Length: 328
Ligand SMILES: NC(=O)c1ccc[n+]([C@@H]2O[C@H](COP(=O)([O-])OP(=O)(O)OC[C@H]3O[C@@H](n4cnc5c(N)ncnc54)[C@H](OP(=O)(O)O)[C@@H]3O)[C@@H](O)[C@H]2O)c1
Ligand SMILES: *[C@@H]1O[C@H](CO)[C@@H](O)[C@H](O)[C@H]1NC(C)=O
Ligand SMILES: *[C@@H]1O[C@H](CO)[C@@H](O)[C@H](O)[C@H]1NC(C)=O
Ligand SMILES: *[C@@H]1O[C@H](CO)[C@@H](O)[C@H](O)[C@H]1NC(C)=O
Image 1 (cartoon, rainbow, N blue to C red):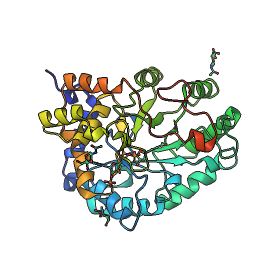
Image 2: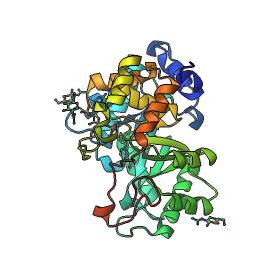
Image 3: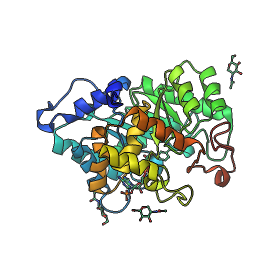
Image 4: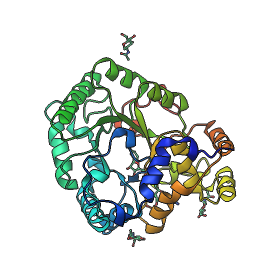
């Protein structure tokens, strides 16, 4: 049977690219990464805390990650930025060799606030531009669920591309009606949609909508409920799931690698977070974990009872994820 990775030109090219020893990579590449070459394996930074945030981020870059997912709301962009600078210095890579994403927080929505949002992020991260800037939620603090509002915010984000502050713009946590509304009202569709996706929340139809519309999808919380801010009591934690465990054993992978390889097999980028060197390395080595199509089919069955871990709907008193699996 053909291996899944061999069916995936994107993942394979990322693999090839990232296999090159750092010393052989030229100090300066001419051009930033393109959306078509977005590295499918990224590094998440939510909940990186304490005094070794920069070490963790730098270690990720030294390990080979070329895609770092940040956000103003994570409250750590200054330290993440120092980690990026340190990682680039130690590997001899330049800014253009990596893909840096960040997100506009809910308190900077609206025509006149968006640019200040990205300016602060650029300064804290210590980069001249972002490869991707997401609207973190279709929700502005204080004006929940007001569609006019997110359309204005989006319009302001399109200007950031014209000014060269963001190379691409995207959305996050939109539901189908909100995304269609946005597509109906802009000549600049989002390049990427970041959303919760893992074997317990597969949203396959929703993913296909994005494929049809040429919107890349990034899977957040790719290890399902493993993030300790989530209630991970039910269902069985994904990394303890015996179906995942058996596949891991058969293919010589770890459960986390199986979850991440499943995500990449669908063409989505995955952005696992870890503050531990051995796990940062383990997750990166997913690029060497080759699943067979029958493994993917088996994992697909884990999505029958969809379980969503990230839903601030109640606290924010706003409908989210209308019409989506395990939504409101
Ligand atoms: N757009 C959004 O609204 C949104 C929402 C959620 C997340 N995100 C992004 O997506 C990223 C990833 O999601 P996430 O942080 O929620 O969850 P995740 O990456 O699925 O899981 C992270 C948790 O798993 C642990 N872990 C990592 N690798 C492991 C391994 N190999 N074996 C066992 N445990 C492991 C980490 O612990 P240690 O750190 O202790 O190793 C951490 O507690 C975030 O960091 C953020 O960048 C975006
Ligand atoms: C960061 O500190 C924690 C707590 O001391 C430790 O468990 C972890 O391994 C450290 N991570 C890095 C990347 O140094
Ligand atoms: C988008 O526009 C189409 C065509 O005009 C319309 O049928 C549809 O209802 C609109 N969708 C939303 C969510 O506004
Ligand atoms: C999941 O596995 C971890 C590590 O082996 C263990 O500590 C934890 O108790 C397990 N959780 C459940 C619910 O089985």
